[in-house]
Length: 203
Image 1 (cartoon, one colour):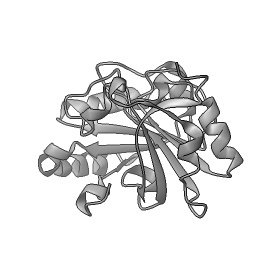
Image 2: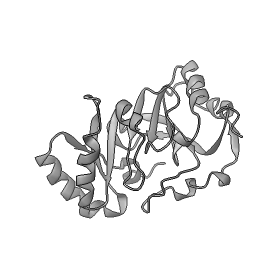
Image 3: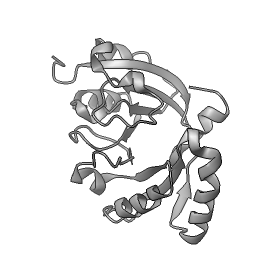
Image 4: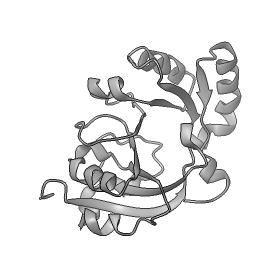
């Protein structure tokens, strides 16, 4: 029982720098919610998949731990849209936080966000509404076939200001970064996203 989103299966929360995409380098407070219905074989946070491993936590207790000077809060997972995020985002807005969502878009659209990073996965595509509101489309490139998937997903975006990113899957980065660079040189609507937090060894 999530009590209307007042209690959520929080896996972890921490202060770090955003490592990926448009806001790379931004000081951010991350709230990682347990539970995922997608199950990518290359996921680097597989321990987030089973929500039963992460006890329901009062959202207000987590919000109170956010440093006052930190503006940006990133809600991530797992897959956070499996839950009602209305209460969490409302309380964060009362604290004047800028709220970012990282999602594959497979769940429900609830809550109020300043930035939505949509990262679709082949095995379970996003709900249509996420293509409308995405500020950032991030496609993970594991092999060459993912470029075609990226173009397929980009065509669904109906926000002209949405930023388009190709990000190498970490274990394949040495192989795929040259491929991504070449692809972007020929398709400059895309940008590259790198997992800089892994390069500099921060959470």
